[in-house]
Amino acid sequence: MQITLEALRTLVGSAHVLTGDDVTSRRVDWMTGAPCQAGAIVRPADTEQLAAVMQACHALKQPVVTHGGLTGLVHGAEASPEELVISLERMTAIEEIDQVGGTITVQAGAPLQRVQEAANEVGLQFPLDLGARGSCTIGGNIATNAGGVRVIRYGMMRQQVLGLEAVMADGRVVSSMNRMLKNNAGFDLKQLFIGSEGTLGIITRAVLRLQPPTPSEQTALVACHSFDALTGLLSHMGKALGGGLGAFEVMWQNHYRLLTETLARHTPPIPPEHPFYVIIESLGNDEIHHAEQFREALEQAFEHDLIVDAVIAQSSAQSDGLWAIREDIEGLIKGLAPIFTFDVSLPIADMQRYTDALEKQLVQRWPDGRLVVFGHLGDGNLHISVSVGSDAPEERHAVETLVYEPLKALGGSVSAEHGIGLEKRPWLSTCRSQAEIELMHTLKQAFDPHQLLNRGKILS
Image: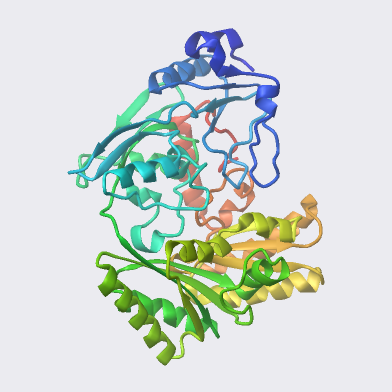
């Protein structure tokens, strides 16, 4: 590294500069458990300390990688021995909640679940939700523009951010801690940092939107006999619930059967004999009226031959049990290892043709290959898992080619919500034009001319 450990200790304190086993004991890849290889880890307490670290790094051309909750899936947190990791693990404060304005101001290292709980304590809610809620951090959620299970109702992380603060590569602090829904004074600079994966600046604080609570949550697991019925059900429930549809999470039969029958990790609420299964969540206010509305919507779906079986959760425990099937990523990994995972988006109308063709091509090349699919159908996002018996690099590339190349003609994306990182960088041109990529390089050069921030991620 270019910067000395002594210089770092002067800036943040000796206890907050980690080396040796304290570095390698950290796992930077949730899937593989790969150890951190950085030259050192520095843990600033606040924006001021982080800015001082970046000023020193900029003077010495020291490259850095930012760490949040380390729940990413595209190798965005990997660091070489020549790089310094800046961990935001000490920057976890919930600074302020404005109940009248409906905002919460937090440091970037605050875990998502802690922010959710803080909002709930004052009778409001922070609507972003995903399976890694206990570990992932707000800074990481913003840097990757996280999605989750309620995008269909509340939008992506981008829609939850009113303002943010970031430290630039040269240590300058850009504080745009806007708390207003309406602010058209010049460029909305926060949008450049959202989804930039730490390549344009290090997000340190944010002002987030809070929403009114939805005290009534109705959840059901239903089965559909065809993809046409599935898409018809999505349209029907959206209309019948009058804007109350909170989640529409689909599991292909191969996903549902693997977890409930093959691995027997969950008791199947519905037999695993149908092509598609959906967790439907409706959010409302009046519990009695809302429950009646939900049941009526499902009854109408039966009448229109959109569903063939259904189970409505009668308690929060039962609801949690339904969601546990959908969120059992650990079981998925154990059942398919070695496994390649993908996070793609494409038009809903093309999904069945795409997955059918993918499965056919996989089996032709690898007769024992397995494909498992689930996802957020309502926002066009599919999570695809593939097992071909080996995780060798050449096998990965071959599978990636089958998964990614068809997306270009469909107008799809190689990353719906996980980001690009290192893993998907070779495939960026599949879903971004040359002009778009050139503009990304222009922005990177303007913000970080010495390529100090998360170098090599997203762009080569």
